Amino acid sequence: MDASHRQIIREIRVKHFFKIEFKNRHRQILSLIKKNSGRLVMAAGCSLMVSVATTATGYLIKPVIDDIFVNRDTTGLVLLPLLVVAVFLIKGLGSYGQEYFMNYVGEDIIRRLRNRLYDRIQDLPLAFFQKERTGTLMSRITNDVNILKSMVSTAVTGSLRDVSSIIGLTAVIFYQNWKMAILAFIVLPVAFLPVFILGQKVRRVSTGCQQAMAELSAFLHETFSGNKIVKAFSMEPHEKQRFFNQTRRLFTLEIKGVKIRALASPIMEFFGGVGIAFVIWYGGSEVIAGETTPGTFMSFLACVLLIYDPVRKLSQVNNTMQQGMAAADRVFDIVETPSDIQDPAAPHPMASGPHTVCLDKVHFSYGDQDVLKGIDLTVDHGRVLALVGMSGGGKSTIANLIPRFYDVTGGRICIDDVDIRDVAVADLRRRISIVTQEPILFNETVRDNIAYGRPGPTEAQIVSAAKAAFAHDFILRFPNGYDTMIGELGGRLSGGEKQRLCIARALIKDAPILILDEATSSLDSEAEAVVQKALENLMQGRTTVVIAHRLSTIAGADRIAVIVDGNIVEEGTHKELLSRKGEYHKLYMTQYAGNLSG
Image 1 (tube, rainbow, N blue to C red):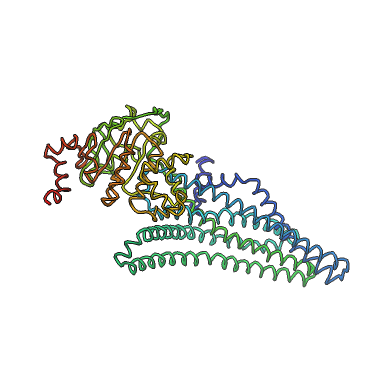
Image 2: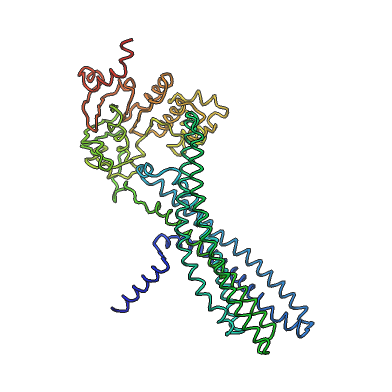
């Protein structure tokens, strides 16, 4: 076995013993720290001021005792108090500067990491959001990143200050009496061993606490969002008990972590006491024998007492680092999540103007479940294709495949004979407007929600889109008109009003391809009639794919495709399909049998 192999084995043994895993994600955190190198240097300088002042505090005890109390030096009586004041002034200034600079660095790193995490989450495909709970993702951005903040700012600050203080005090101790110094330090390696072992347990418990906190955030998001259903079914006691169970689990984990973390300090205190006991015994013997002065001994003892405090704090830093590493793993699990939807290496530019959409033998499956089984469809520019069928047939899947929310598992989707996988995702989606069954709005003004799909529109364009969507009149009835805040998810609006704002948003985007995914299915008849007029304005001149539940809304479509179990079973106009007495006729009769018999 050569030297390089032996070195590798030694490194593996060390890593296994201390369970240190210094991964690429941790190096990325270090790279973020390096971006604040100037402030880090300032913080290091302030830490040096603190350590020098701390060292001087211990050293000054010697002249105070020997010169003033033993030798009765009146000059020293004047100078030494002034020196003490200067030392504590330097220590105070250094502490302030160190605290400010290191917390600035910590906050900046967390800001960058939080931005990076949110940026990555937004870029991940729709499938990711269907697997992850909203509350869990919120916890990653808030709770987990805050734990990292403690590691970066508090732990690094403490490490700089405590390590420099230990070095300075150690130099003074060995300068004064190297034999006593060895006695004082002999117990430190023994004390640090259990501290490292406890640190690994802290990391495991911290991971469990962070997971429990994420589950609690997800639970709160679900119950607050669904509060109307909770009240409608009188399930408040049930939800309260579920919440109490969640907090009990989190409490149990937190207390377990407290017990483990609390052990580190007493261990260090005990071994520190053993070291100090040796110092008192040995140093006292030397003072009695006349081999050292009382001032030297008291100064030495003070430095030993001062040095054990930063050593003890370093043991707490290890716990904070372990918690931070656990949080880093949870954050970077998201940051490093690969996306299934990738831009091509050399994107094909999309031509402006009207487009033709073609589905060529399209297959799609969720895992082992086939959803689409060889779909062939073409929608010429300016034409309207309606997709109908029972729920679960695959209609909405087609709507999700065209803007590449998912990628086909077989076949291809083309726009103007160009496979959409050969086009940049952003370029593709700029040419598509979508109005969904559930109108999604943001807690911004009416104006901001309409302008959402088009940066920097004029007031005239916003008003024109609102008028075309039949939204202008009800907007003017609001207290602040277009500047009215609409509440979370548009909670202050009716269903029809929300949908008309969504149509105005699609209108102002002015994309040549339009997807309507059951845009009127959740509305009452009166609201549907108004929204349907707005949709007719929106569809003019656009290549449109309509997914419809109510067949009355698509009677005027250029072509209708009936999808059953992932296959197209019928295709034609409304009249043609009714005359065939097939699947479309069955759907029509099911919806309107009551009206016909009446």
